[in-house]
Every structure is written in structure tokens, then in C-alpha cells.
Length: 230
Ligand code: TIU
Image (cartoon, rainbow, N blue to C red; front, side, top):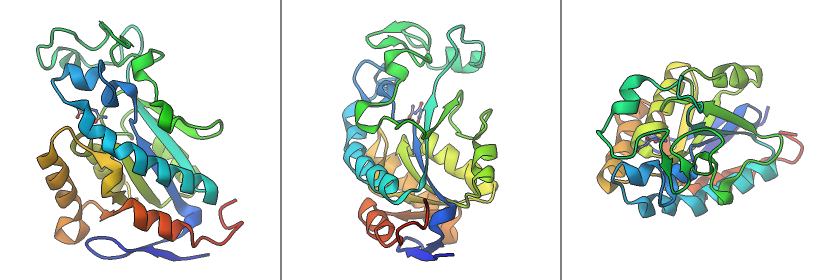
């Protein structure tokens, strides 16, 4: 088994390429583009767009070296029966989840806004997880799929740092996965939450995981010997 090491905070993380997956969390138009759920919540979506390029570079490298790749999407059935009433009424918004927005019905599966941004669309064969909540493990088959693949290490990218990324990293950590987060591949609508969100992951000896950068992840993935992961 090839063992490699990511330089990271609070200390380097050893991993085996064969048991490492890339998890791309909620890079959907509803969060990243104007007219979606994120903007409806009163946020400036432009801050999130800084993560697109680094995510793209990590995704392309992960594909090249044959890592297992998973994309998640937050959203609901058209009849909203899988959305808790508490989520539907949260925020006293003028336009709610399920209402018509500029990119179709907000956060509803199959609508334009719910789809992945074009820059980070899954390729055929990559795993897509439809999730109703903030966490990627809640009411999905992600755990089953990762266990069946023998995955132990997760490179977690996506949005937003303190909401779906944090919830997912916490869920993964409790299930025994080692998570590494490239800081420039996650983003928040709030610069302060981005900073503190990353601090919280790596504090106390890496209480939830490790923090690194896209450059480091790519540099180390390039060291994977050919045919290791294929
Ligand atoms: N509002 C916010 O920051 N995020 C979400 O609602 N979902 C995700 O983070 N994907």
C-alpha cells in the first residue's frame, strides 16, 4: 500500500490513495450564483465564487490520479415532503424553499438552481449524493458507499464552510473518517466564519480534522504512482 503525506495543520496527515475520496459539497447554482437560495437568505454570493477555481484544480487532479469522487447536492422533492416544516418556515423569507425564483423552484431537485455549477459538474460514473439536510450523511447512502469503497480519508471541498462543510466534516469525523480541508476550496458568505470555521476544525490537535491548501493537495496527489488507484 502506498502511503503519502499531506502537509497540513495541526500536523501532517498520512493517507493511502486507494482509501481516499474527494468530497465536493453542494457546489450548486442555488448557493453560488445570483438568484438562488443563498442570495435569498440575504447573502452576497460573490464571496463563494473564489472557491470555484481551486476546487476545479483539485477535482481535475483527483480525476487524473483516479481518486474516488463524490459530489453532494442539498435539495428536496418537488412536493417538499422531505423538508422539515422547521426548515421551510425558517427565516420568515418572502420567497421560501419550493417557491419560483429566477433559477426555478428554490432548492428543489431537478430545477436549474439546484443543479451543479457548470464549472464543477460531475462526470458520468462519479457518485452523486442527494441530501435533504446540511450534513452529507444524514438520510443518504454516503456512509454505505464510502465503506463499500474502503474509504478512510476524505478531502472535503465546497460550500459553505460553516454550514454544510462543517456539518459533513463533523459527521464524518464521528464515523471514523479522517478529513482534510483545503482552505481555499471552501468558502463562506461571511469572511469571519470562514476564518473561524477553519480554526475550529484544526484546533485541539485537529478535533474535527486537518486544514491544508489546494496547492499542497495537488502537489501530493501528483506523487501517486500510476495504476495505484485504477
Ligand atoms: N446558508 C448556508 O450557508 N448554507 C446552506 O444553506 N447550505 C450549504 O452550506 N450547502
